[in-house]
Structures are given as C-alpha cells and as structure tokens.
Image (cartoon, rainbow, N blue to C red):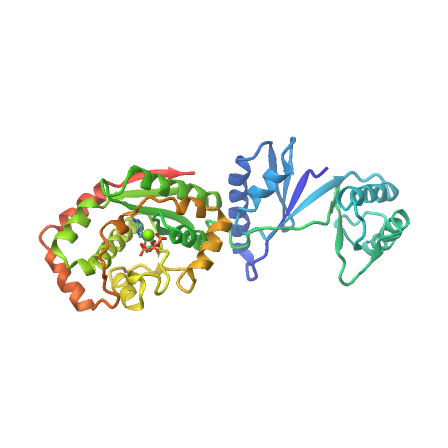
Length: 392
Ligand code: ATP
Ligand code: MG
C-alpha cells in the first residue's frame, strides 16, 4: 500500500546556502543506500521536504533498513498517495488506511491536514473536522485527542494527496559529506569502528588506515579490518582504506627501544604515518578509538605522548565512554560480532608485560633517538607499501 516515504531531517541552524548543501548531500547518501535495494526509486525535493517515490515493487522492510543507515534522516514516514477524486472518496481512502495500518483501532487520533494547493474546496480546519467526523462514524471505538494523539493522521493536499501517520526513527546526525573528511585509524578491535561511525554521524566523510604487520598478523586479521570497514561503509558510503605494512618499523622499535615503551613509541609512529596519509588526502583530522584509562597507552599521560607528534586535530569520540557503552554502540551498528573474532592486530603482538602508564615525554623522545639511523628510511618504505582498498 505504501508507495513513497517522506524523509524528515532536522538539525537546527541549517539555513540559507548550507541548507542546500545539506539536502544535496542527504539525497546523494540516500541514493547510495537505495542502490542496494530491490526496485527503482525517485528522490524528489519539494518545498523543503524530501520524498522517496517507488517506481516499481519494492521490499518495504529492506528500504526502511537502508534508509535507517543514512545520517541526517531523523524520521522516515511511509506515505500512501491518493488521487484527488473528491472529499468523500478521500474519507473512504483514510478509513481504509486506518483499517490497514491500525487493525486494532483502539487508539486516539487527530487529523492534521495541510492544504498546499489553495484551490482545494475545503480549508485545512474544515478538512480536519469533517474528516474526524467521518472516521468516528466509521469507527465509533476511536477517540479524538487534539493535544496528545496516538495517531497523527497527516493529510497533505498537493497535486496528489499524501497520507502518512507513522514515523520510523532515522539515525539522526548530519549527511556524510557536509563536514569535510577525516582519517580513521582502523584496527580490528571493538573501538575504532565505533569511533569512525560516531564522527561520520556528524557529516564527516571517512578514509581509513590500517597498520598491518605480516607475518606477525595474519591475512585473516587484515580481512577482518576490511570486513569492519565494509560494515561502517553502510553508514558512511565508500571508504578508502590504506593498508600499511608496519612490520619493519615495529621490529626496529622492538630492537632499539625499551620494551615497556614499545606500545607508546609504536603508536607515535602510527600517528605520524596516518597524519602523512591524511594530509595527502585532504583529511582535516585523525580519528582513533581511544578512551581514557582503557589500557596503558590510553592514560592521560600516554595520550600526551601520542598526541604531540601530530599537527592535525585527533578526534577521540569515545574518550569518555566505558567499554560496555562502546560495546552497546558496536552491537547497534553491527560491528561487534566481527570485532570479537580472535585475530590479533599488530598492537597485541609485541606488548610488554608491564607497559609504562605514565610515560615521560623527554624519556620517550630520547629513546626515539635510538631509531635515528634507519627510521626515516623505514617510514618512507612503509608509506610505499600503501595498498589502497576501496571498500563499499
Ligand atoms: P580498538 O578496539 O579500536 O583496536 P584498542 O582498545 O585495542 O582499540 P589500542 O590498541 O590502544 O586500543 O589502539 C588505540 C587506537 O589506535 C585504536 O582505537 C585505533 O584507532 C588505533 N590503532 C591501534 N592499532 C591499530 C592498527 N593496527 N591500525 C590502525 N589503527 C590502530
Ligand atoms: Mg586494538
């Protein structure tokens, strides 16, 4: 019965030119999401509203599920179209609509008509009243509640007549592409996919970098990261994933630096390399899945050490989250099951038994000088291993 969806979007403060940018980005992301659905669709913008109109048969649940991945959508309203064949006919259509959508009919309602076409013979107030009366006559068990109705029957009179009452929640946020682009340090863990999701939700396009350490980390570990990127890309659109071979750098640090500082120094090199790739790809920031105190390398002191090697801002959307809260988001967005597959990422291989939790910056810098002889060359070589995987 539904042949279209009215898309609700609401972010306060989007005005003027920004509104068009917002809407255009939203439409583009919706097209990307709908491409994966059975059927043909037209997306139409009219008077500050966006409609998805099905041109063919389609699977309602599939379309809703895909639209629920599009940031910027606050609500998805399934719409029934009716031809304008007189008011009595419209009442019949609405009565049938209620029978179809609310078979129980034990709910309060309100008719909210909008006459977008002013030559319609009744004005909105009259439509509300006359329609309400017709509904009560058909279904005496229903009740009108103008203040807090359980069913808000929206009737918009345009060339055709649009009927909708249900609002299925969307993911909220801003359309991807309205907020620039950032580079996500994506590992195979639980946290970083969630971090990428959260920043993308604010309209930021995501590129990603994964530090791979063969043979210490397996092909399966890399595949896991690709799989995670694919899940995140359902929300963000295609992700350009850079895979960097980090083994030689890691071994060299292992050879030259105190083992309890290994993780910190390694993370500093990850940040440096990620920033280099970020700048080459017009990214305006880095994103990590760090959260204060989660592990030794994420204490406030350790964060000072990893932060100081970058010029670009480092966005850490999980900084104040408990692990359980992160897990909840990862379950919601569908990355959890993949994240907990037991393939080691390169951080876990060389970890010391007692890593420093309060690294002293001067000490770390001094020990990094142990690497002076070869590190520049190794970083350059690592950058040359950059394997670009376009994940979609
Ligand atoms: P995650 O669950 O995201 O792997 P974690 O709790 O294992 O996080 P760390 O290993 O300390 O934490 O890593 C902190 C952050 O550094 C990660 O959230 C991620 O953004 C980045 N990171 C760690 N390892 C890698 C890697 N191999 N490739 C890319 N980024 C990484
Ligand atoms: Mg990790």
